[in-house]
Amino acid sequence: SKTVRKLAPPEQGMSDKNRDRLRPFDSEENLQAIAKLPRAIRRHLETAKSAKARKKGLSTAAMAIELLVVAPMRLGNLSQLHLDRNFIAVGDKTYLVVPKEDVKNTVNLEYDLPPETVALLAWYVGNHRKADPQNRYLFAGEGLTQKSANTLRQQIMGSVKAFTGHTVNP
Image 1 (cartoon, helix red, strand yellow):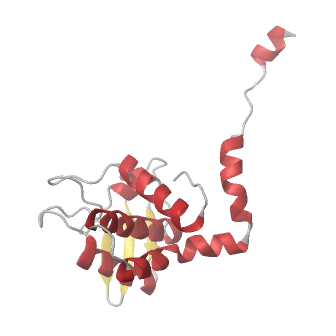
Image 2 (cartoon, rainbow, N blue to C red):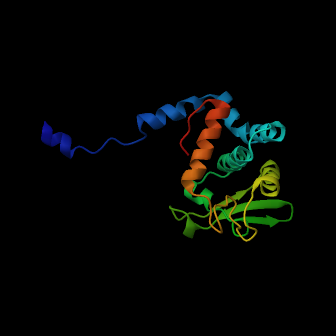
Image 3 (cartoon, rainbow, N blue to C red):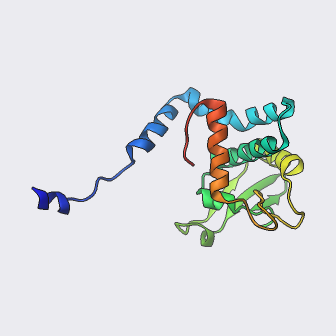
């Protein structure tokens, strides 16, 4: 009856759209393509003769994808990563730390970054991160601000689609 439908709890779980977007990643081959994508983008950038703005967008996407693979977090936290506050070097290790006060579910995030990720970070910061020297956000925006989460999302989505053919919604 109509009343029963109104009182029934809403359907829970993922939407059909999200299920459709995740299904390709049931394949080990597709998972590996995403995991290797940041280095594939780097190789592409080091050999391609594309426009500067495109190179900057691709390098940003490569760095963002790498961090999402090795240090899963919400896009809002990713876009706000700060070079001095969130990346901590101790000896030969580098940690990515996001304090619980900055995380939606109030859980500290701490990741020991693999050497390949640290190398990509050095490549990105040293060669592609163009920002005011006082702007210490990893993904720098205009002036002293960080890049918006939406801009970062678009760069990630575009790069994943261009290099793998898959649609993701980070």
